[in-house]
Image (cartoon, rainbow, N blue to C red; front, side, top):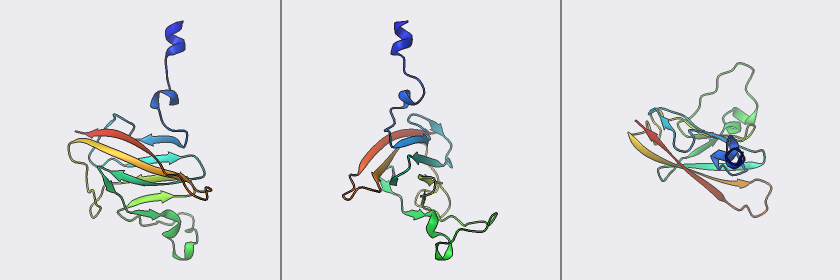
Length: 136
């Protein structure tokens, strides 16, 4: 009984800050060289992403369309080789690809850092979360 009460499962086991709802890869995961990084935040936050100490340039998804208008249903949007912030879903993602700062993850351990802040704060207090993942 004591073992069950003391065990941590689900979200408690991830030690994610309350601002981060989920992320992939998770801390300690093994991934492929072209694996996408996605960090999903609670509503009301913005973020930037660093991988192996490199600040990824970020493009806002709502700025990819001309004049800020939403694309027509089914229309394709060309994503740049940067991190992409999706304000509608409060996610930041990065896909290694040709022409990007990191075209593929080299074999070994990598360190990801997200720096995030509340949008509504007059003087935003930047917080960060660091995790590690490995590429075979």
